[in-house]
Image (cartoon, rainbow, N blue to C red; front, side, top):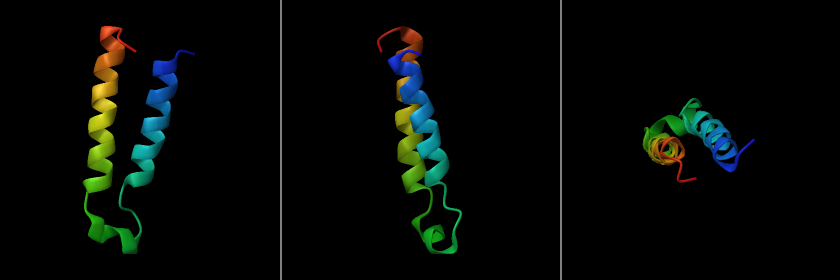
Length: 52
């Protein structure tokens, strides 16, 4: 496995963990998962371009 693949897998798991699913975290909105989602998209673009 390459470093890029490992980073993508870790970020996907973090993204799933940041989704507001519990009652106390519903007030957070989609901020945490949105930030992780943006990082994931940027990393995907870099992997596809061959920069990572």
